[in-house]
Image (cartoon, rainbow, N blue to C red; front, top):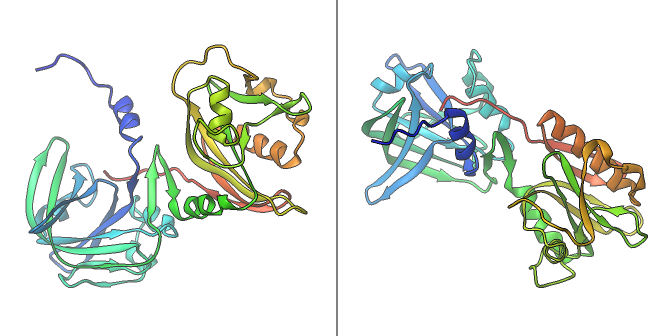
Length: 314
């Protein structure tokens, strides 16, 4: 038995690095009342027989219900169903009145607009610390064309927008990144000698000097790109700009042609592009509030897809 003490908050942060889907697990109570909760602890177990599992916290409001029912459905949410996830992650009354649903083949509620659903009979319950593992046998399922909703590091992520942006990289494009370390942003020396965000003609590889990865590699920095932050077109040229959020893999040493500038020391007005100035201001504001979004539009107008934080029941 190890004597090492695990900090639950730090463990939750580490586990949050694993990108998951978002599901709503539903059932009918013994009196027929529909019940459900939001969960990202869902996985496939076996194809023969067809088994899946979800985990429910013993502290969840619907725990007693799922302890006595004979099955459940897993609704794998589509990227437009963040509101559904939020509703079923709280004690909102009349939750099932806020979704369109019907009974699946095994008699459990399945939602419209999902990426997929699976209706299951209860195969086994397994005690697991402060949770119970519900292993279900798939009795019926349906997959749809909607892109799935993702979840990582306490925020929703949408894969469809990212896939569209990467596919568009074959156009005349500028692929860039806002790389942060200790509340400071990596700025390069631009063509005019002023500050500039790191950009390339494509994502590419470190050996390609024209790619974003190549530009970052030339600084001597080992960095890691994360989620999309902005996708916009330059008015007049139609050039596509795709910017990612990024972090570094290890403490920076001596950098070539670049430096980390603290948020409060950045001369944002010195950046050549008005779009870059606006984007960097938004980044600093959202980073301060720990509430990111993805900007889509052109360099003057557009809208932000929020990556809303949420609290779940698992």
